[in-house]
Length: 232
View 1 (tube, rainbow, N blue to C red):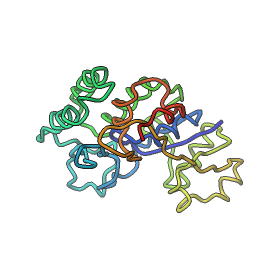
View 2: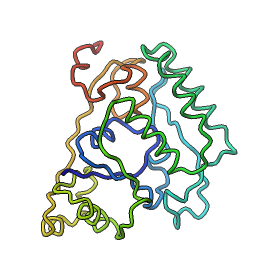
View 3: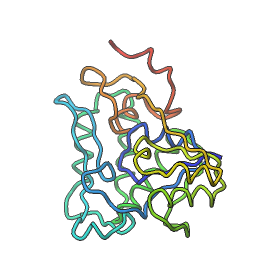
């Protein structure tokens, strides 16, 4: 069994879903510490002027002592309306705009004040859109302790995983010898961004899933066949 894990992310990039799709079980790490200026509450879309951040504002006072589960979204800011306006302005001519925009409106209309809850609800939506069947569980619903490498190893042991699929950052903190002692093989994700048709000039990798969705639509997310239709 292959297990992977990652922090919540707002409008994640395609590599996030690649990791989930290659796993049998994915742990949604909503009880780890919130990181300011990370991809947890923001991501990028493409515009005629280059990339643009879509940021979900959070109440950061005292955030160093809070987990993602505890973080609150700042709904005193009209961020949902602004994000929809940005998508409307920059993707109205995209092939799947008519399909996606109303769905995105409904998705963003959910009035949840908790950062982790919003990201979880959105993740469920994206997994349905791209037909990813991996079992996904929330860390907050598991009674598993530990920090960093120990936390991940404990999750692998709990779920009887034989392989842990890590992102590249794991090389900096995973105690691989401890995993091996427990019969867990550590593999590192090797993801090369798939090229697909985009608006606004040359291809830009590592954008939010929104960009792929508006240009290529729902269905199988990691289809390499999209490469042959790129406009050079």
